[in-house]
Image (cartoon, rainbow, N blue to C red):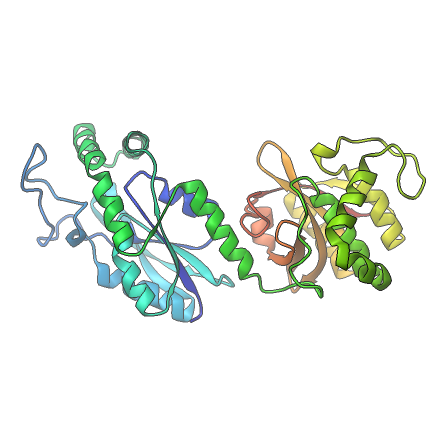
Length: 381
């Protein structure tokens, strides 16, 4: 197999599409394989206030075989032609090419996703399958506001359909679990996929994946210790057996007013991680050249170029990543592979490849943990 699929099933409005977008992986949207609105084979609702209208929640309303064909093409060749379905127009409006690029995993999500889990498992195409769910009231409200915003159907139809789906949600979840999905909230599914991606990391340091940060706030100190290990084989031999202790000792040193080398430095609360000036001084001692802090928030393309230039010339560099509001994590850029950066992530103890496209689009998750946005870089002066 060229790639494998992560299936996201669950009730409409549970957050499958948003989760798929957050993961940063290529997405096969199974809802694009609905039948056109004029198809005479579409099933109709037989009873209740919605009787007589198309039952879009019945499996016969979509083309399962077409979806499986596209999924097989993606797994075997890495690319497939897929339709684009417009709900407002009740049909397919165009086709597009879905290319996985270098990704070894991709996401398939939709309200009928559970119906492909068995076939994918039998074909060796399945990496994982999750039933994404939330409280029925939360799902109802999210689904209704989304459908009204996108003007998918008349408001009264959407309200009636939403109430019916809220009553049916326990049955949908039970069906997905019976067909092989794992029950998870959006947050739990995100974390599980992140662990799966970390296990598939294509490259590693000479010492293997044993270089994880020992606690939640020592990512900067972990990056610093690994930087010195890469440059000093004797230090690496001494530090590796007691790696966690060495990281914590270094982290305490970064917080003191006097550094381990006897230089005065601005103290910094240990619970807030590692200040950039401590890493600048550490890298200066390791590499023998001065380091400075540069922005990556407003000009990510320029920051990526600086990191790539430094790594291509054999220098180490630091990348701070985080959310839209706050820098939360420190990583170490150790080299390049073509146009990509090789970045050491202390949270996994592994190297991850970061592309220029992902960096400039600010979608570093899940390669660098749950933090999607580059904030600042520490590069040679």
